[in-house]
Image (cartoon, rainbow, N blue to C red; front, side, top):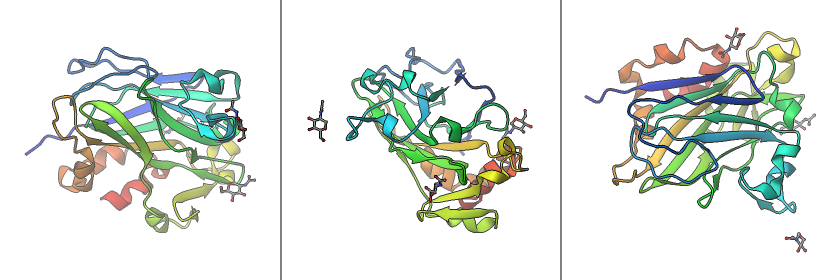
Length: 243
Ligand SMILES: *[C@@H]1O[C@H](CO)[C@@H](O)[C@H](O)[C@H]1NC(C)=O
Ligand SMILES: *[C@@H]1O[C@H](CO)[C@@H](O)[C@H](O)[C@H]1NC(C)=O
Ligand SMILES: *[C@@H]1O[C@H](CO)[C@@H](O)[C@H](O)[C@H]1NC(C)=O
């Protein structure tokens, strides 16, 4: 039986927030999220998440570029950057704690996940928060081909997880959102920290198949729920649809 490891990367402070962990099994020497690399299973992989307005992610209002691309001048825009180093093909939950000094809504309210330079992959722009609604849970798929990142995209569950709680409303038939006024950073009682579940698909540099998505679907048998359940309900309730 496969031993399943789980990573919960937690960010508590923001300016350039970062959670870069170096691990013995990690043979990937590339740490910048704006550089190209070729990975194998159990390597670390640097990944960035940028927060800004939607327009800040587009060049000339038409072309969405990677936040690494200097033509966007994100560094001078009202933006924030989070860096993570999850392990390839390990189930990871990235969290960004918003209860203290970071509120996505005050940095434009949208986010893009990105990595790479020549193969500059960036996810579509995702709504996180405005003064009315806050989305706290996301699933990001990292698709590799022979160890090179090809694509990043958000996997939506069509609001299936909203039904678990009356505190959530379904936005655009894809995101479960909570009222921003209920969030702790707005004086409410709910921890609206962001949780981003990562899943890996495709192949590593030895053409080994990355299958953490398959494993997520089978989490129940590994009793990982206990690990996640240490996190606040606002982070975990989204995952109930997986268990
Ligand atoms: C910007 O977009 C406009 C209209 O969409 C186009 O005419 C112009 O050539 C573009 N400029 C650049 C630098 O791409
Ligand atoms: C965020 O930080 C606050 C204050 O340190 C803590 O009470 C809370 O549990 C944290 N939330 C998460 C989801 O880690
Ligand atoms: C907040 O976002 C929601 C969903 O995208 C939208 O329907 C609503 O009009 C926005 N509210 C404000 C105040 O921008």
